[in-house]
Image: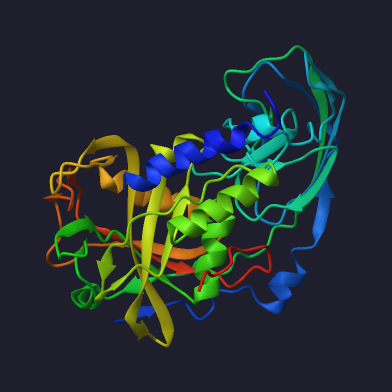
Length: 388
């Protein structure tokens, strides 16, 4: 196969898919005092632990439980031999066309790289370890290691991983952030979004409190990508991604309406190629009101599982998981595990949606609750860029 062959394959998949389409209060002492911050200095360093990370298995549990503030020094050594691609070290092979066309545990890293994650929740985003990685834990959880290979791929050999943890000193914990939300505010928010013709569609199932940048940071750090807005933008983006040997995951979604306008942002989490058929996705609108001077964002999240017939026109459309509460939980978990949520609560509106059909005719069910999340401040890490 020539090096240019994957481009038309990717375009064919892309084009097929495109045609198918109050009041809240935070505790005033939620942040640690200066004395508490100073007392979190590292005081105890554990001895380095050694692990063999097999290239023929999945995630391995190191047995090391991290707490926020723990500093971790993680190194990898050794090499793996691929039959045709040559030898890879812990940083993995240079990205190739094959990486564009397959799903890896960490699609942004090279094949065969040493990777890690904190926690076993499906919403957790893995990160590259490579030959060396130092970081400070922001979320509690067990540390797992793996070789970045597709689930169907197996190699002989393993990496040697060394982990040293410097524990954060115990502190008098700051009083937990308490989020109090007046459910009466939900009367200002429609229960469901609509299509262009006004047909009722997905239910509103989450709300965010924070600035635009806090919203974008939270989703970026939670493993979500901001989707393209138009087919033209998608084709250009797909070309650029393919040339850069990066997977294209930003496939556009249809416009739905809330507060009389299309979504401000669309976000997705998906795997290469499978993005055509299966992906977590959501739409977000900025609400026309604030609470205590903070912006409010309203969203509807669903999980595409495949295709079905659009009852409006007979065309092909996506079939969503009818249990939309699972997707509500996935959004909450992914943003929380990414460190973007300071506090959250589930709120039941006075007129909850329990059973309904989407604008395309698919049915869904819910307990009717909406998760409200107060976002943390911008972390200064790389974030999704607004597409204006």
